[in-house]
Structures are given as C-alpha cells and as structure tokens.
Image (tube, rainbow, N blue to C red):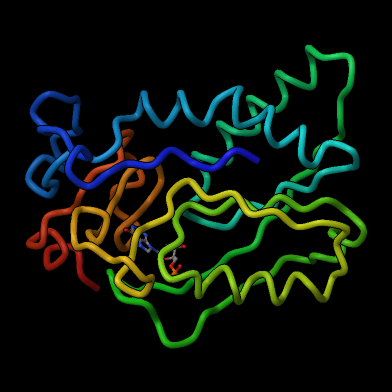
Amino acid sequence: MACGLQIKDEESSYNKNLFCIPKHYEEDLERVFIPHGLVLDRNGECLARDIIQDMGSHHIVALRVLKGGYKFFADLLDHIKVLNQNSDKSVPITVDFVRIKSYCSDSPTEKINIIGEELSTLNGKNVLVVEDIIETGRTMRALLSKLKDYKPKMVKVLSLLIKRTHQSSGYKPGYTDKFVVGYALDYNEYFRDLNHICILKEKAKEKYKI
Ligand code: IMP
C-alpha cells in the first residue's frame, strides 16, 4: 500500500480565520492543521484502490476503532463501495467495531480498555483496522495482540494520522506534537462536530478538562 502524505511541521497549518469554523469552537482553536478538503481528497478513490489491490483477494472485514475513526471510516467505505460497483472485479466487505479507551483529556490512561464486540467474525478474513490517530502505537499494539486470538487471514492497519512523537528517533518538536481535533477526532468528546483537523489551544484543554 502506498505510504501516507507527509505533512512537514513548517508548512502544516493555516490561519483559522480563512476557514469556516463553528462559532462555539472559534476561541478554542489555534490553527487549522489539515483542511477538510485535503483529508477528503487523500481519503478518496486512490486510497480505496490501494486497499482493494492489497487485500481484495478475499472477503475484507473493515474493523472500525470507535469512537474517533467514524468520519474517516464512513468516507473510506463510500469510496470502496463506488469502486466495487464500477469495476469488473469486486470483493465483499463487511464491518465490525471495537471500542478502545486509552486517553483521558490529552494524557494516555495507564490501562488500555478494549471493549470488544463479538470478534469471532474475523476468523479467516482479511481484516482492515481503521484508526483515527497513532501516537506511540501503544493502543494499536494492544489491539493487534487481541486480534491474533481470532486467527484472521491477514491484518492491515490504516490510520488517518500518524504523529511524529518524541518517543521515535529523530524527534523534532513542532505542531505534530500538539493535540489535534476535528473530523471526528475529539478532546473529551468535544470537536467531533468540526470538519477541519485543527490544533487545540492550551487554554481549551483546561476548559474541556474532565
Ligand atoms: P497511542 O496509543 O499513543 O498511539 O495513542 C493513540 C490514541 O490516542 C488514539 O486512538 C486517540 O484516541 C488518542 N490520541 C492521541 N493523540 C491524539 C490527538 O492529537 N487528538 C485526538 N486523539 C489523540
């Protein structure tokens, strides 16, 4: 599968006044990090085609990691559906869900809670895990280890965002170290109703803290 779009820190944000932002969040956001149009364009036919090419030899189960990934997931499935309808070769896709709670406010919780549905449907299938954001990879490692128990034929992970983090080598502080919200990414459940992926202001973290 083709690797993702690299967004460099120095070119990675826009003045929020140039975009449509819901009034109730105007004071909470620092900058627009990734405009909605760019997300939609990248998460388009091209990504769907890569997935079908890599995994389309066999029934695919798209496993949505709740709650964050819902916009990314829904838009991606729409594109795969269009491809399936318009090409000579098509592949059945079913969906399943798993809920993971690994963050409280902007800090990782000690224990990763995987609240599973009945996942025995993954047995022998090509599983596409769709996640919203990977930071340290701790959450994904825990999920992949659980998925092994169900003996899928193949597992691939697709993440909307992968943060550069101080825990990987070559770390350079920048916007990617900030907390981002929007396009269903949340801060304590707020900001899912925002189209653009934006950088949260420090003072907004206090405002919405639980
Ligand atoms: P990891 O386990 O460190 O890779 O963290 C991944 C999880 O942390 C994601 O599933 C999100 O729930 C959450 N997360 C990490 N950074 C952000 C962020 O900037 N915005 C929203 N959620 C985040």
